[in-house]
Image 1 (cartoon, helix red, strand yellow):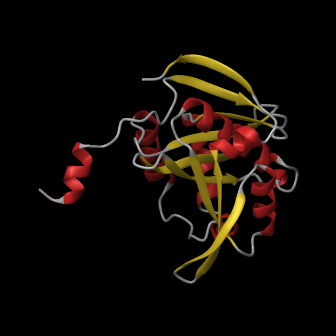
Image 2: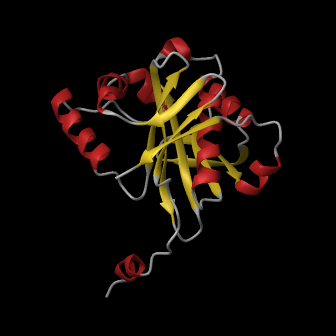
Length: 208
């Protein structure tokens, strides 16, 4: 049997998400479970070239119907390796998305990603607030102890936002033709940082 197959058989059992639907209410944002009604915004953001550039990727080449079909399947049958959220403002307007993914059950780590798709909310602290909400979820509702991310070296706004949320710069990483800041935060450091605001937590019904 190949080594990868052996790893699947002996994956460590760690908690990677809450059994219940958790809503996190911060100073500016509400981080919540994704729903079908988010998909039209999601599609518009995924075909936006400016947003794609910030993520060092390219716009998706799918019709809305194709995108909707894939996304509904992801909502109904979520991957065990990632957890996705939507971001609302305090008036329940969907303004972006965030997620943690590439969950490593061997070293209790994951990668973090966020996009404020509604550009009217750029530069007002919504991304930092949503990130702090999500870190609270990760470090209180899962066994993950390290969160890291990659952000383009020229994206100073994002780097400042992540530092405000508690991330620390670690090193420069090159991928293909892009250069990224690799930033990380450990649960132990997050717990010591008393300046980070804690969200209001609403616990809903158990998830399927």
